[in-house]
Image 1 (cartoon, rainbow, N blue to C red):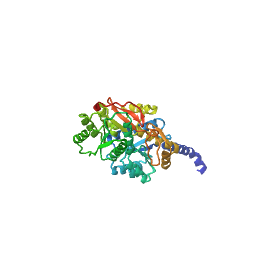
Image 2: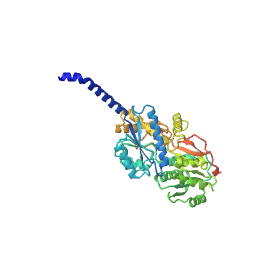
Image 3: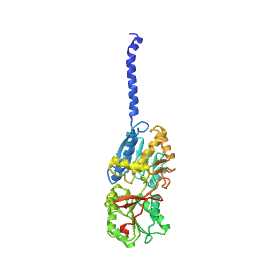
Image 4: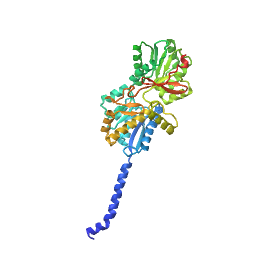
Length: 408
C-alpha cells in the first residue's frame, strides 16, 4: 500500500480522534476549579468563630459559582483545621494548602495572630486575614510580605474608638472612674491599654486594671475589688465568651448603681449569643471590627442569603468581612485575568479599593485598613431585648442607647 493510499484510508479516523482529544482537553481545562485555601480553627477553643469563617467563605464561593464562577471556572474550597493556632499547625496548613493543593488564595478570619505570617509569607499566593494585631502588621511589614493583607485595623485603634463611642452616647456618668479587666493575649491588653490612654486625657481615672489567667480566674474577689472602687464604666476584654458570660452573670447579682458595662469583642462572638438571647446581657455594650452595615441594600441581601443557607442571622464577628475578602480577591483576579498570576493580583489588591458589605476595603501601605467612617467603621453594639443591636457605626449614631436596668 502506498503512503498516499494509507493516508487516504486512515486520515479521516485519525482526524476525528485528534479533534475529540482536543475537545476533551479544552473541556477538562475549562472544568478545572480554582482552589481557595481556608486554614480555619474547626476544633479547639476557637471553633465557634471557625464555624462562622467556614460558613462565610462558603456563602461567598457559592454566590460566585451560582453566577458563572470566576473567569468561567468554578471555585473550590480546601479546608485545613488549624486547631489551637499553633506554629506547627500553620506551617502544616501552608504546605498542605499551597504546596500540595495548589490553591490560589488563602483566607481566614484569624490564623494564629503571628505564626501565620512566617508560614505564608514565603509564598506569593494572596493571604487575606483579619488578625487585627499590631504585632502581626509589624511582622508582615518587617518581613516584606507583599502577599499578606489584614483587611481591618488593629486592636489599639479599636480601643480608642470604643472609648470615644461610649463617651458620645450622652449618658450621665456619676463619676469618671474606669475599671478594666483583660486577658493575657495581645488583642486584650492592646485594646484595653489604648482605651486607658484615651480615657486619661478626657479626665478619667483608671482605678482598676488587672490581667486575669484563663485557666484559673475567680470572679468573686475581682468583682469585690471593683465594687469597692465604684467605677461608672467597667470594661472586660476576654476573647473567651464563657468567661465573659460568667463575669456578667455574677456582676448582675450586685451591680454598681450608675455603672455601664462593656464586654468588647466578646459581644460579637457567636458563643456569647446564648447569654444575649436569654436576656441576661441586656444593656451590656460591645464592639465588632467590621460587619454588615445596617440599612445597606447589599448587606440586607447578604443577611437574607445567610438566613436561607443556614437558617439563622449572620453573626457580627467576621462573617461579612470574609465574604468581602473572597469577593475582593475575585475582583482582582478578574482585572488580572489569571488566578495564578499572584504577584499581579497582590498589586491590584493593594492599589484598588473594594466597596463591600463592611465598607470600603482600602488597604494602606502597611497592608491594613485604618478604621474610619470613610473606610470600615467599627460597630458599637448593645444587647437589647435579647438581641444585639448596632447603636453606632463609626462616629454615627444608628440606634438608640438604652440605659441598662442594672445601672438604674
